[in-house]
Length: 153
Image (cartoon, rainbow, N blue to C red; front, side):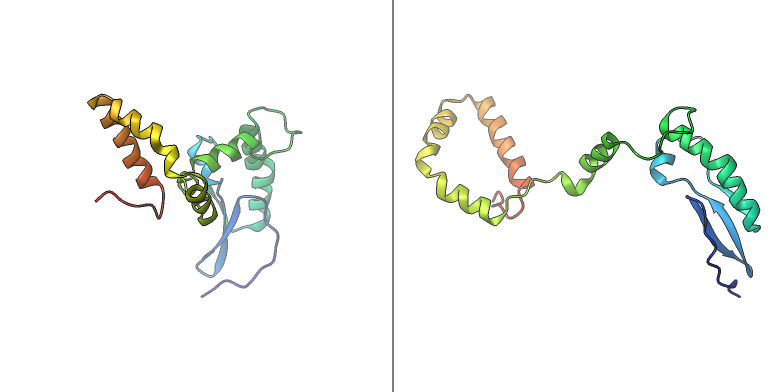
């Protein structure tokens, strides 16, 4: 049996879940906070809406906000810092691959003629075996990172 629908507002990080014909309320801090070591843990708030909202708003959210800001001051606005947002962005695997788009590839083909590669060829010819091996390893890594580029045979 599904509990009756309800449109009652809930505080941040409070979730409502059906429990045997009624609603149960749970406080669940965001995953990023739990991974960062937030001392405010997820907890069941019970089936009573008023008691759940009161506990979340008077006890759990002030503790969470103080931890998030790193202070005991309750007046500062809560939320992630810009440094945190950029760190999350840079750490995301979707933004760690280098990709050359078609126009960039066309520009490189057009504006980087083979004549400019002469000094590179001379440098490879004059390199020691260890240096040549290191260069070729770097080129192999670059080929793996560039989607659509030629692969080693």
